[in-house]
Image (cartoon, rainbow, N blue to C red; front, side):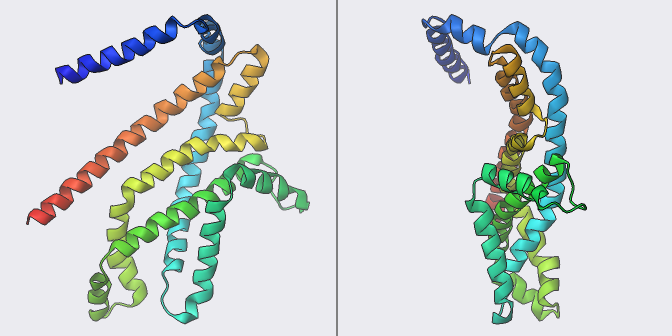
Length: 259
């Protein structure tokens, strides 16, 4: 432990000395680490990041069940369900293949242009819709991997007890699969939290858009550093929680093998 602490201090200390003594450090300091700009921008960005958190929470609540439905649709057996499996596959491939920023523009600006009176006009709603569509495709693949990791004998045993295919999925397969995929789900939601910044392209005033506004007013990039720090404060605890869950699952598997 002592060696690790000392080596870490030495490495980061050398990096800091090299950066601070570089010829362009005064310019970097004034452009990216201006204290006055930081203090002026921080309160506005703290208010704006509440929008990102709202986007994240609303989208997450919608993604979890919708992605599970997509995953189940892709696993339906028999030729009669082939069209459903095909639609679920096309959905997952499309929304995983098209860049998120492109979908933001297509949906955020395309759907309102249809001109229907009943369509919402709030860009926040379209931001939620795009995030749900994109991340449901990714999360459905996580769910599907978890479902396929359950040994077929589990479903066969449930069917032998008189359960239907749907009941076997609901009571036997899916509960086990969800426990296995919690760590990768958290990884996806870390990405979701960061990608809430994409909705700024359709006019939502969230933390990244607020940083752009502050940068335009001050001609200084310090507001972007404020944004980066705020995202780190949110995502690092999620990353550590993911590591803890992975380690716990590994210990559980080792204990099961030891038996």
